[in-house]
Image (tube, rainbow over all chains, first blue to last red; front, side):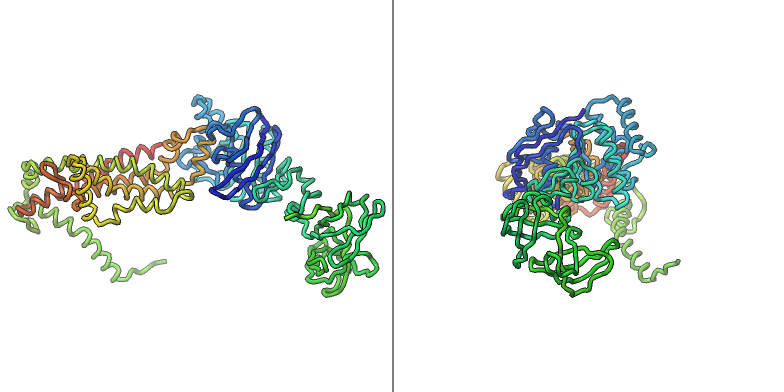
Length: 355
Length: 262
């Protein structure tokens, strides 16, 4: 069974502080969507609202045709995987996994059979009789996963499930989670603060900030075409240069950076350019050249660091401090003047941020 | 690898044990003495002072009263204390901090003052029957122990475990009994033992609340000592200790082991 999740205009308060602001999100049937953001952005609040542990001030939560908003948590039929595993310490691994089936009135023999099958799927069949205290972190999270999956919920939710594991295990586990989720085709919501984790595991990612969704799209679009400065910074566009158009000639646009340096942009390459915009680039999107005749932002090179594939320069310009990557040979001298040239297919034209 | 123990440390340790066990040994010795006065070391060997306890009807009655009181007061305090401790821990962030302080007030207020105020309000003011007044008093003085000890147990309980159970379809009240309570079992047992001992040994509060016809064992011991100086007191004391130990053993056997077997 797999159903779409629809969240509409969800608002929530803790006391007088508003933690969620008119949030809408739809997760397609069988889709895995991540909520990504720093702590305090509202991602966990969203998850707890959907799970029924918090009550929204306004808004609705629907799973398939069913309105969950007023339903008590224990009737929502959602599989949850917690950051700290939340296994029942006094029950064996088998009883932990069978717990949800017991609540659903499944007979003891059937319950045990299905719990053992599920444990087998997560590779823990031989640990069925152990108590959770005797398991490693990775094993605990597998039990938690089995416990959530065995009830065959129409919706699975993960609350930072891997953040207590070490780096290697984290990568293995996220592949495993994705495989199980794919195999079952269960609609899933995955909360994390780890960009790599979110991008690698998800069909779509919602990047959140201050209780709002800043952009909701596929990892590819988020990574290459951030919609605003917040998302751009989040996905590594470290240079944000405010620009103002001074002249338009057909598709050719001349725009001035702070300090009055004029740069040429072709709308054929950059897409439509508004009068005021922010040019966003990663360090790779600004080419460093010592050729004084090239059109570019004049810069003084500061600290140089070696990245293996390139040198990275901390640059001082009239538009502020920027970071750019230059060719390996020849390395440019620190303190020397240079030009920074935007690379069209590695730049984004963003609307300016309004406070 | 060998560690040498300093001789002074050994001496100190032995002394601590002597001071801890000394009074118990003296009381036990005095209780089996064949003399008509309290003495140690015992002269002769006799159990007649134990028999004597049961020949004095006041002792018979107060032993029963004390036991009834201790069980009822502990039971009531647990009935109030477990949900209170649960709420104080579960909603720690939302609740004001003074709320948990309220539950230690009966310990903070000097027992004499506490007993007197109960006398004024419950016994005289509301003219409650003596046993009821005692029960209220004892429940209140043991409640702080219950709340504190169970709170300590709940402090290390991860409430996301409770949420996990709820998300799997277990209603909140049922979850409390099947998931939360089994995980704070040791705290509940410890609270029971502490509360029971506190109640059965209480003097100051009971002193104000006992009255004609109804008294507790410690108060009766006090009354007896004022008039007699025979070893009955020692044997009653031994009996009180044995009773306490027995209750502890029963609690540990029943609650402790059945819970553990799960």
